[in-house]
Length: 141
Image (cartoon, rainbow, N blue to C red; front, side, top):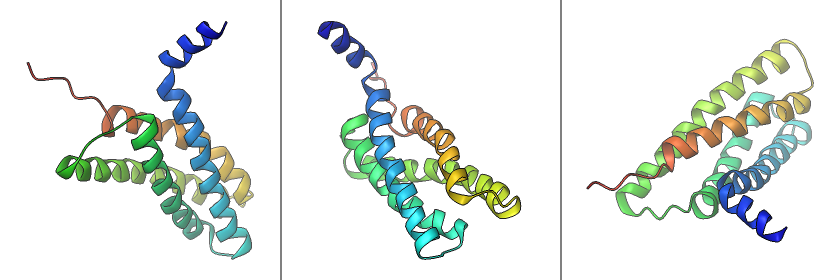
């Protein structure tokens, strides 16, 4: 049984770790959103941007080190960092649009919408990270 669990973990290590650290990123994002929006009464769109900055910093650090095990240095590190933030900006645009429609225009509860949208955000961010930012380059032979 343990061998089977280990084999499954080895096969699905990246998605498992991504979901784990993605959960941490979600906690950082939603927790800071609640602080900014519900406690400090900052407009939901601005509160979402502030929470996004904190969540992306956490996500980059954990994705780079534990999920995708990136070892880039120098110029490649900066390219990776820029690609990570650019990909997250695209997903943020989708998230902001959904908050604008459902919270600002339709007056749905901000927290409920934020939590619901996180599923799409997590999937979008994994796809961008795995296939664009941290993709393994094939050896040139």
